[in-house]
Image 1 (cartoon, helix red, strand yellow):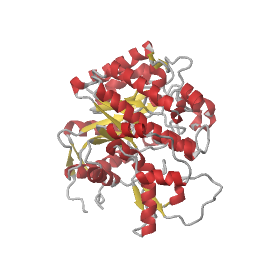
Image 2 (tube, one colour):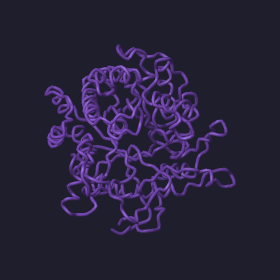
Image 3 (cartoon, helix red, strand yellow):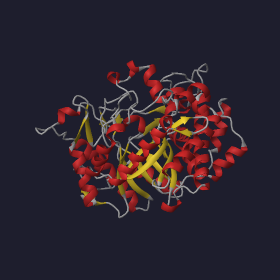
Length: 482
């Protein structure tokens, strides 16, 4: 496919925005004893493993500077802003779902300030902010009791903000925490346990369904057309070759890391073959028919999808140690594509066509449900070297990255995909898990050496222009569709 034009227009109702989370921006200001989240606990347990020892203690100081940041959202052209409520901050008593009044006031004021600046808020209920005490006392999302506590917390959030927040999401990337902790054991507390990994996955699927049920049974947001969904990070998967063994490897990877959440969220069913494989490997999660019925009857209204880079796999070429607990890689090996374009700072392949390929899959396999890109972006280390004489970061690489991905996304929209918007990660530079501020993603620089002043990058001015003009020029002179 050759690129036939250089100017691209945004569809009439297609929005532009940016995302962040509570724990990556707010800092610990205002938090009381006992209000740590899992992320806070992780940082406190191993601060030496975080880049330069920097964690979520102050983050971007959004808790105190949200008014300033809300104005900046307008300055860089955001039409929507997605963030999360920190469950560990918002609830005072996790067992009774008693709301912390100071946190309630903060979130009310923050949401009002965002709206005041012409930006629509989108709220996620959990972006890794599981209360630490629930992790320590119940094993976190391995507990059905925690599922029920989450539902009660969600009801309180709906009650507090449902009259002014239209878009709600249960989780951001619900597969991530337990994959890093229990499947691959690369994050605190470093426990490889595949059965626990799968129980966390299942319980989060169940939690989404129960919260969707509560949302739809209540009066939440009905006067403003409220919708509820989930934000997933499907790993767009490509087989090394068209050979049956490589295609099967890709199918298995897709089953464990994509269909695991996509199918129940949209179709209301966990794939039957997943039950069979987990039973075969003795790591099937605990469930019952009543729970499966709840999942079946409470699918989401819309999807947010976080897409950054492709995943390439091939059939396994070596054996499996029978003494090692089951891991999905029993069925595949990762494949390193020669000659691929890379973001050398993050170590991720740059392949904008993932936008089109995932969009067409949502259209053809998932009923063309309403969805949007909830995260996409380019993290770069050492951006200060790209500053001009005025001290503005000239991040043309980010402009090209966004442009290339938008082009493929808009092609899918032209072909009938029900994608309603694009959100960048991130609004400002912010803390990432363990990498802290190593790789910068923002439209706005957070200057750590100068009282964390906010400075709009070149990409921020460009983003504002396409948000206002509703069109943009392709930045990549090479063929885009190929």
